[in-house]
Image (cartoon, rainbow, N blue to C red; front, side, top):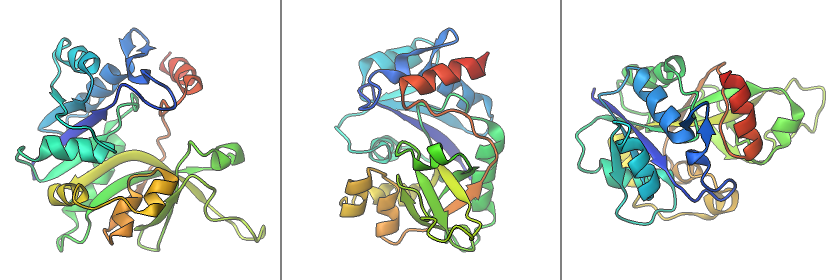
Length: 242
């Protein structure tokens, strides 16, 4: 299989504008993410897909590969679907631009599910990590996921799921890490499917796949890392980098 990585990168993030151009130990967040993705050695090609001249120039001036979006897009999946339409590949990995701690071990786990999927039942795969801190579980910036007994996603939410009504039940909570591996056709199909109310309400794009009956295989990882959604996250990332 030919596997490529696409990193969607918006400049005007709603919670933390220009976060991808913030300094992280001498380099911008987006450049750190790009370099970390390349360094995994898992991809034939790695591209940043952006609507911003600033981000495009940041990547290309540092020897990276960047693609400028031709249209406005509602989600990162829409943005990379436009870019990947004319690219020959089997699997597309969407690495979030605010994930400078992207590493090989977790990505390999996600990609391995396609090697075992001889019937091609899996449309996309993603990562989840167990969380135990109740403050993080309640935090709406942390997207939670619940799965069935085969680790296929049942639902994603910004609310704590499942709700712990019975305190005697030992409940595990999982945070969704925003790295996806798509079959190319599943990604292209995404752009033809109108947004429904669950996705619109939660503002979580992968819910759209579930609403239209797509199968999302979740893979558990112990690698936490830091996703940079807020200025506080950036400060934590700087400390972790040291």
